[in-house]
Length: 336
Image (cartoon, rainbow, N blue to C red; front, side):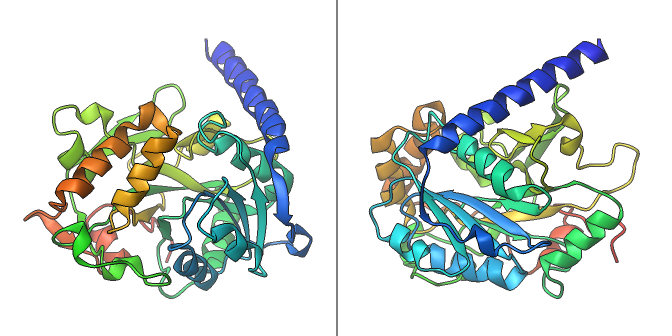
């Protein structure tokens, strides 16, 4: 039984890799600076569309963490963000007009670029509204984390998505380009999370937080997944299966300790809930390119129209990674 399961998963992984090679043909280089990638560089991979307001702070945040090179796919932006990215000296950029939905919500493009450029590197795959927090990130660069993981050795590093939001209506404080979004969206749910194990691929499945509390109170299992594996020591034979929620080979999903201990893990601070949400939701609903027919974006559009906010009496204000570890939302494991 175990042999046949492994065989089927290996075939599936080969299929995802072959599909990624085909979908990579949809990408046209705008600025290819991959020749400047150095051995040992931590690479960041991202698909974006019309995220120009976010990109200045996003790039600065990850530069400060120590990311060596950025590889972006631009899905036909019309807000100037493609030109902005093309001018950045540490960015390689590809453009496509192809369907985001038919590329499995961009993950086929990411798998293709990861196979071509990520082999042998630690690779961080995130969205433009996700900000990676790991133990000691306030005093140590990301290379300190990856060096430690190499020494163990550990090939993948998990992170929970933590939805951040302001206190009061989303429209109350406009977000400015280049601004730290967590000056506005500084609150989060400290509890209200449900965790299950995926028996087939071995990853954790986490749901809850404000998106379940506000948008899916009567259907919690339809709430978005909050588990991701964004940081991986990539090999060209690897492939993400569903966004960065899980990947193959199956062992890469075992980013938790089932023997009573704690493996190190981080958090992705999620800065979606700003005053920009309403316009973004309307745009994406019009495109019809998102999961489940844009179910989430319909809920976001309704929230932005009513403008009630996500804050509640149990909300916590974000301080630092140590606070998140005390709350049990991330762990440094035995890294000291």
